[in-house]
Length: 308
Image (tube, rainbow, N blue to C red; front, side, top):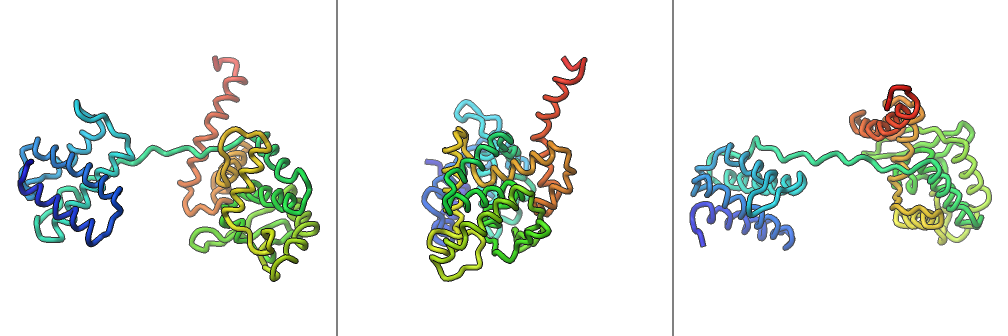
């Protein structure tokens, strides 16, 4: 077993993570594995003590993670980023404890994971989903249809939908006040389908549900008359997706993504969609414009005489 200043530094850091930070065993195992590989890299560079490590050594380790070698396959961005985070933590610890004077990992940034495009479903799948939710016309089914119409019609997050109170609706002028992340409020238009579904729920279903409880102000109620939970809303959506015969996984965020994608496909300005979604930055919303490129290609390929 190799014993040198690097081994001593690693042992001290792992003790710190175990005793002072109280990291979970699986997390500690990942740190240990990544940092042992890092020490192998440093020794191959001729380093034997943490004070000898240079910035280029840390950067070279990141390159080796991404490229792989005869003993290790190339790592994806997420796995490489995890290893670099462990390395940066090690060097911060060594500086803080006075073991080294400088931090060679300070300027080495973990690789950014590739952006995953939001998953949207087609309009026909949305329509099938909404129809399946309210198919049997029971009080709960009418509620479920209203909930899903709101999620898709307003692009609401699931937490925003279940957090709604009745007095946050303005059915006369067709708007709803949503409270998003950081308690940021926004007013979103209610489309006619969502408004009709919510009105039907308020007239035909909510009175029966509220009678089972203590008069909750919540818009969406469970069978006991209390506020519908996020978990129950997920169950509503999954059940409707199964009844609609949608094979792929559908989540509340799927409806939010579909809301944004369908708006952009219909010609909406990205900044308008940003306001409707409640994104603090338009950069967050612009990922949806990548989704619609496929639609642009499809239209171009079928419409332009010299596209093929």
